[in-house]
Image 1 (cartoon, rainbow, N blue to C red):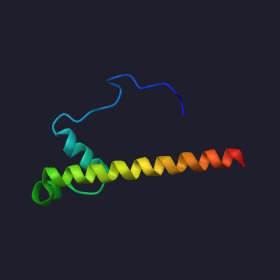
Image 2 (tube, rainbow, N blue to C red):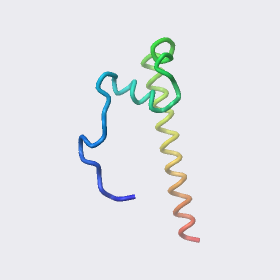
Image 3 (cartoon, rainbow, N blue to C red):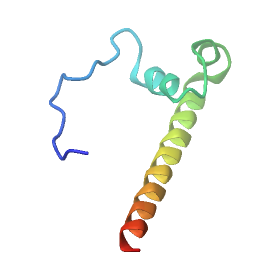
Image 4 (cartoon, rainbow, N blue to C red):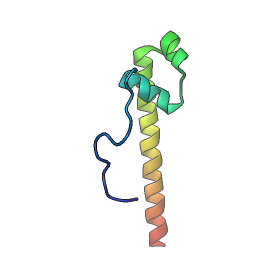
Length: 72
């Protein structure tokens, strides 16, 4: 992967939904209807936290595996 960073405005951002709704829906762990009817803001924040931890741990494990394979 390149070390170049993306310039601001290159990727699309949601306009008609909040960042919390966007992030929660992006995880695939809930639906829009669930957010509106049963999950709520606190639940959405928990879903986002869980997803971020899972993504971080997966990335960390891949990095360690790649580092270990290069040393062998």
